[in-house]
Length: 307
Image (cartoon, rainbow, N blue to C red; front, side, top):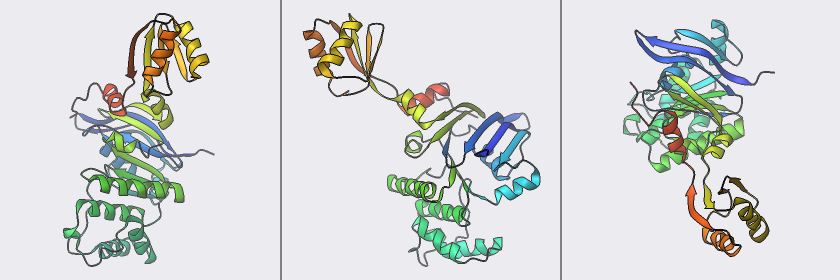
């Protein structure tokens, strides 16, 4: 059985001569929290709109829950909740009234869905406060409540944490993790804030200029970006023996005359002392590695702005 919830094959979208999305292929597996990462203008929103049926693709193919025909995609989208760009609600209605209005417009009969969605996002106590009086965080949470009200199997979120304060970001993050872990909801979330996504994502798609530049799992990305202690010596073989026998270090590698140590990185002085006492000359000691943000910038060519 194919576990792909979303799969695109060389999908593209043109506006005149401008190519917003170009031959982009990726897949999101069932149960993943897939982070679509790119700068503003990279094509993230356009791609998500294509997935949601808000704009047609110019080229390529799309499957949702294994469906690719027009009628099948419509059925698959009924299993999907989405929040694209800024949520739009009636300013003179309360949180509950807005959700009830949307429920009635959809023809949904279960009134309990409204209260359950409000509880999930922490707005059950908003009372009669009108939407126009909401903070940005409250507006985003109400948008999420609408997206999850029908219990979707796939949740698509476009830049949901933009403009939120640290507490608002944490609350949003906790809700997404709860949906994923307790209900098995597959999540596709876009953002350019990699540091926040790294706390929830299980897989990443890096997009630049409308193209997918890398698709990578969270563990593989952590391996690429992890910090390590680099020690340059005159004799790597003798130094390796010292690390194993005198210090009990096992997580290290020797590359030429450079040692890359992946444990006890806060003990550089102890390493140097043991190596020198064993007759190894130490030329340089430094902490190395790159951050997730540095990795991302390297992928997209130094952080240039996209059209």
